Image (cartoon, rainbow, N blue to C red; front, side):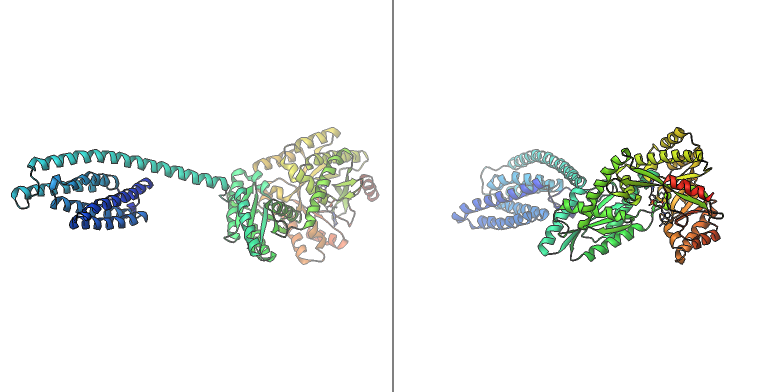
Length: 628
Ligand code: C2E
Ligand code: MG
Ligand code: MG
């Protein structure tokens, strides 16, 4: 028999919280009742019933202890079994159906209905009927005559009927109560589950499941408090995926999301279990590292992260490279509050990006100064266009076999009235980051077209002017329009202009990008891939895009005479170009030996200081005319 719960297994030992509370209260009340009932019996020297009651009291006390320890099943038995025994004995040895102990039976029935199941309740009712029946039999057979005068056979029957009717009513009430409690409990469970879900949502990123900004801040507070107490350090690592936008734009948002989830999973594995990886939004992650004794420990975590992410990811069956740049700020060395440290880690991350990406940097105070300088440069750039501070210089490009000039690369120069000549490596990344490159790039196109047309008038012939196009420009929609209007303005056929695109732009196969490049090709423009060899090793994209030439990055070409590895790389790129029926253009040719080697490899075009650096237009004109 299972006195407490409807469910017959052991797990059903628990009661609803309200039931458990009731059980404890009932037990306390019963204990008082037993004590109050036993006391006058003791005073009246009625030792048998009073000792029986005292014994019951002890058992009830044990039941109370069991109930308090959540052992509902045991508590139920400890109440029902001795109570029933005690009451039955009192009735049997007392006045039978007219005994005062009969008054406790409805209470017991109520208890069985509330805390037991149907079987307990029916068994108890039957036990009472059997006891009264047996007593009636004993009494009227004369085996055990009850010490009462007015007891008839129908007295027993009436008592049984009254008890059954009352307890049936109690049963119905108790069932209704139990049902309501069960419903309430289910509802409570649902509310608890939603609260838990809200709690998770409020503190976690919905896409990756990582802690969000709020939780990251909280974890940092804990880590820094711990570090302060133990005189150790903590660190914030700010991470940005280098080419996330390219993946997102070219493969679509679903692929971008998949990449973020994969990155999140790798990051969690790359750090220690006690560190917190959080997503700050977009492709930015913040890692809280606590309890460290020196920078070396953080450096080894950072190395681990950079290396882990450098392995290619499989997204939609494509191998995608998603390297990261990482900035580290240390507590308490680089700041003591979260906001300062986060800002410093962010700054250090930008430094890592500027240092060529796929790297990490520790924050140092100089970086703060750099930011101010960058802001200053960006604001100066805004007015530079209007003040005519930008100029284009032209570096001649040659056919290597006969050293004939076939074109020129337009390279941007910024002549600032106070800061002097600012090299493109310093301001182009800032122009890209601030979006100013779109406006500046449009000016470059217009100026290059104007110059090309002017040189035609000067009789320079079929020179192709190559213009560098930033990924930011290519991604935006205005590029084609800017080209068309620049060409139309001076009535220049498109085949006099070439566009140099960087490898990273073409990382993944993307229909919109392919279509855009196809439209540019259809206009008649020449397309080449700049700085080839420095970006991604995934060569499959080369087949997807209709480009004409690969520009071998100058870093390999410059060193090829002195370094066998670089020579090997250049040779491989020339061969790749050849087998894909593309022209190889070597940039950075600085001496005759290199020129000779390139010629021997079959590289057809090139540019470099061997002939000339980029020149202002009038000098370029003279240069070409002198060689004619
Ligand atoms: P890039 O497109 O790879 O341009 C070639 C760079 O190599 C130029 O640097 C050029 O002066 C340099 N160079 C050429 N031959 C030699 C050589 O023999 N030895 C050495 N040491 N260097 C050589 P520059 O003009 O400083 O431009 C740097 C980068 O800035 C360019 O690299 C290009 O990515 C970017 N850039 C320049 N102008 C523009 C522009 O109008 N728009 C955009 N988006 N980027 C530009
Ligand atoms: Mg270039
Ligand atoms: Mg280049």
